[in-house]
Picture 1 (cartoon, one colour):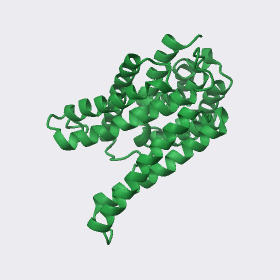
Picture 2 (cartoon, helix red, strand yellow):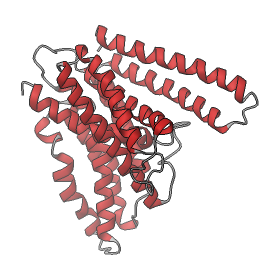
Picture 3 (cartoon, helix red, strand yellow):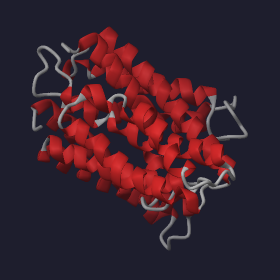
Picture 4 (spheres, one colour):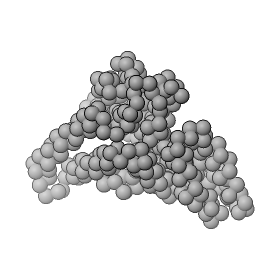
Length: 314
């Protein structure tokens, strides 16, 4: 968990955050000395939140596999709470909701902890999806039954199943890459989040053509291409710390940045449907956990299974 490559990557992220903090403070002193510029204040709040999140992730890496799994289990719990808060349910769903938080989520991460791939890869989309509606059906309420069940299943898929594939990267057995799997987690998060930031930057600079103006007015095709290509170029330059060749790293980066973009788009559609701007307010300047995890959540299962299929020994 303390490989030189990981330390270099964390050091690079730290250097970026130091630079961002300096720029943010200069902007605050020059443009918002009294704190009346919402853009500058939001920027500094986001930078502070990133510091907290990077430090938490770094501590989890140092703690080893249990620490990483615990961190993402807690993130899944918080994300699931945010998601289910916006869903349709009634008193008949009481036991099924309790099962989501205190049975299905812990079991998914326990199966991951003991590396039971044959079960954690199908537990939620097969067993939970089939058996969870029974708890609501037995209560006899048919009002909005399909909507209630579907929304709960979707919450589990996004917040538990997909999110659990991030720490699952620790258990891949890649020849010649033993003891360095934590790099894959850092690599995935870094490339996808960098793509998000650069999509915003390129969208502001040259963005003209909206991807889906009714869902997310800030997302443009120019921002998508610019952000994905920029992050992919950086990810390709870091190929030496991964099990991928430069060409393979480029293809993988394009894949996960594209999936990350679509994840953000889908989550925006759900928020618009529910009439909310953010999933929550737990992370200052970033909204909720899902607001920060949406792109990683969509990219993680694809990254995990492609890596497992082509590079893992099992």
